[in-house]
Length: 437
Image (cartoon, rainbow, N blue to C red; front, side, top):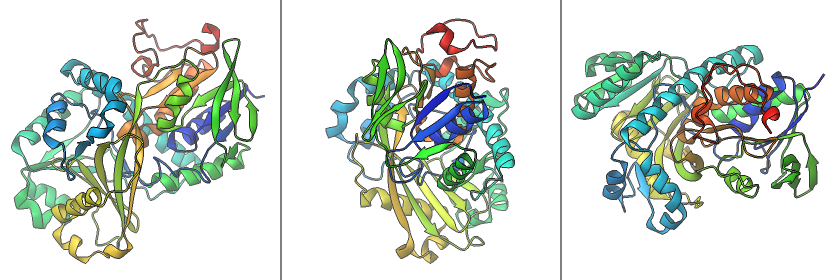
């Protein structure tokens, strides 16, 4: 017997994962996606890495000086476009406030808990559903060219080791033995850290596979269905208004990435989430010629990930509002990443067949996603994951299902609550949200 109807708004990683977790929890679920297929927005061509090893938010202490230094530089890892500043103003003040060391480290630890839990859940889903999405299980190798950055990274790994993070510092020679592709540049490196528990995979293939499994279980995934508003009656969400008419539901989950913010605001719910543009480059390669494991270059703030017969280069954060223009200069920065990590591969790949892409990540101001109930009864949220959307997808969805159903939460949900100021002690059990509404 169903525990009730749930409408999930959004057919990307967050939405489809939420649908699966809620279906497993006993709810009758339907997914509404505005595009013509699933995962055509933020989830389409991300970096492909699943990295509990990288839980740090983008607003590290001193980020404001970095943004000022990088103004006008098209090759900058983080680029703020001046014309977009008014749209980010209130969010930006919170972004900078959350870069204070105490807030930053608190968010990093909360993210790590969610990332590690999420990867465990993803492995369980993969086995249960027989999902194939170009999975890589050799971990991530992060390389460093600056002694100071390397020392700082080693210290951060140690600070998270008590929580379970395993990272092995390597000298350049050891890094090249682990990843032979790096042998020709080892003279440029001061060190590397190998994170063996990390994974990689194609998020688009995952979403398509998950949609197939959901539909086989009776979950409806409606594409070309744009949600215009949440209908709220007597303080409770009772469904959504779409271009095709009203869709009733006892509960509504907003998992539409940065597009969730306006729909929530129309209900009086405020989440500090704004779009931040990221770029990627997908290059056909012979798997034997590419890297064995995912590589992250600390100095370039970008990653190179093997995804079967595709090599994915991804990175950069561009604060340009809702602008989805694919800018050649930003794509060139990814080509430079390839040349910096493997000059030989850079010369030999077929550049004509490479596919460039950009998409809008839903970035919360404090670097932590929003997961759980809102002030409107029956209305829930799962968004704001930023660059950790793939890593945190399965864990966020499972935590959301636990909160909605009232089953014990596997991790402390308070850091991800819509009401961040909640101070009640967490004892591992959450009463059904509906009882508080």
